[in-house]
Length: 342
Image (cartoon, helix red, strand yellow):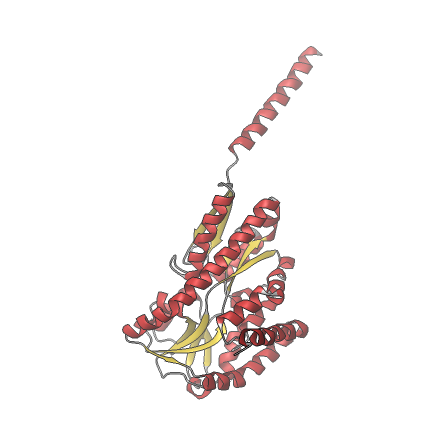
């Protein structure tokens, strides 16, 4: 009996030793983030602020790894990894996100926002937050909207000032159905091409043009392969930051709050950086030999009148019409608030 008692005690002591050892030497929580842009892109700079904030506030308990330039895969692939749990976090444009959550199609409504302030007001308001939260049912925790900016058209055929100027132009778009529908209605020939293949596609003249925010136009050196940049602002394109919901829910309440606070910090800082840079980017593109034209309010209204209704109808066929109407109502209300007194 004594021998058995001593054996039992030895087993318990050994087990406790391993448990304590495991607790003592358990590493920090990993938060790997897939980013499709370079370290100098506004969303990347925002996520650098996120990394510093989270690591400082958690005293190193959470270690953030930022993986730039699609090192871990393209936007759609990265979101798929987050959804499956093989990756903790990623940012992606709304277009690729619609593959997983059709509600994000409302962000692809063309000419929906007249300014950054109106777009930010809607995204940060109740309906914008409900859009972020709607991904929880598919395993994604929406945290914030990192900045990418308004999308504009570049091409080698002619400047775009209205709908007629897009007729017959073969234009690269994201792999997003509503982006393609917008340009189809406007008379262009949309051709989806992954972000990682964009420059080569333009260099080989497979298409006449492409569309992207100014930060991306500059970063991928479109001035080397394109003649014209037209500031159409046809779609405001934020980049939601999403996390695997099981990973997020395993964090302590305090850690969850820190992650959410860091995400909002990243969002707001990326917005500031992007907006502050845009005039400088236009000047740099011009200096590189591109001809940059700003589309007039009349021209934008003509573009809007031709494409928006058709795209909204397509979105309502795929998404709850009530949600789409609520989204449009929120834009109308924010327009009124921003323009009050002017």
